[in-house]
Image (cartoon, rainbow, N blue to C red; front, side, top):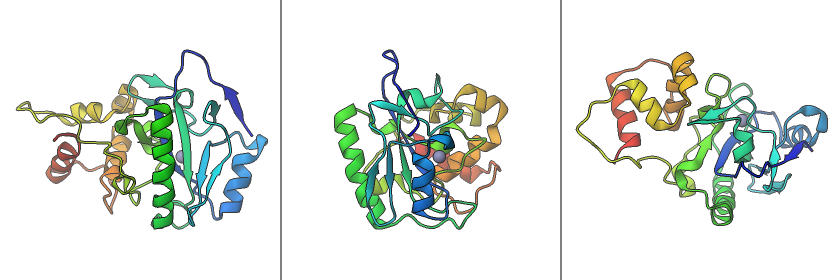
Length: 214
Ligand SMILES: [Zn+2]
């Protein structure tokens, strides 16, 4: 297993949700527990709802890679990682199962109570590494696990442009500046769009605004 001790000044404040992106649970488990793979994860949830705890969340696992969120860089330092078994976009992306959502909800409630993580800090790999990652993707419905991640801003009369909205969503300013089209695609995944393109239509802007504001 790959892990480090967490630094005292870097407390856990996020949970990052992933998919395995591999053809089988066995292959994913092997990779995640192989010291030479350079990756690791705290929890893995199989399609039949089994939860594997590979690394203690008090330790730092290697799941996020190059990643930024809000003003934080290297999100492994601040997060607990959960992998959901799914073949992913390159090997036959499928719906997550009801058993998976059920188990994930239990796991998330446990983490919420033990680490005091607010709903808006349950984030996706595609949010923190938008130019590299698509997971968990547009078939993942966060409302199915009882998390109200979005809609925590109050509506105002101000008009916001796309950069403002991307900033409110939480993307790091580096990604907004250099990888805006990937940020837009990540938002579309959060909105569960079926077609993911970097186009900014009026409808998308409207959906995006309504995702963030109550
Ligand atoms: Zn991932």
